[in-house]
Image (cartoon, rainbow, N blue to C red; front, side, top):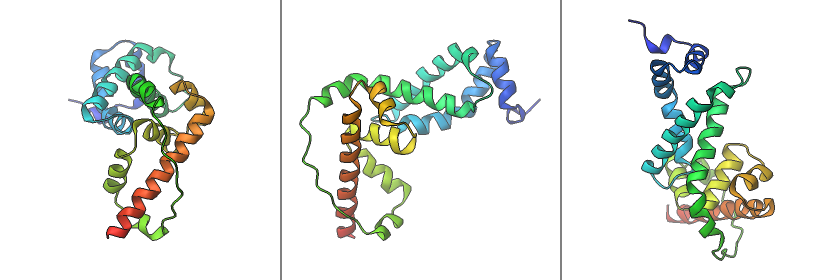
Length: 183
């Protein structure tokens, strides 16, 4: 029996384009962890992330014939996962747009504090941000979207995207400085 890890991504994609359920399952299993990692950054919890990932894979299999084989598959998949997770959160974000924004205060944190943080610490700090701030931070800083793309995806003005990104960074600085004073 052939080990599924030996099947090249190109072959999997080609077979998925032919609606091979076996190859769709292999593709799903191969990229599930990556997709979950992306989705978790845009979701309240693991269950929401899992639903977004499953919805994204349905979209992927329905539109795989539109995939351009000259481009990176992971990047295409990531875009679909991000957009799906954002679509799932869009209703909640509409309500958050109506909330009053906190006054921002710039707080500088020594660089050595950040060096001492673990990935788990950073993720925990990110989890304390309001969903809209966290989403925009992830889209801009981690996934490389520009403010116009974020504005289009979230149905907000580009200027609001810039403001929310600034607020997210300031809140993270405040949280990091607070943690540093406790240590």
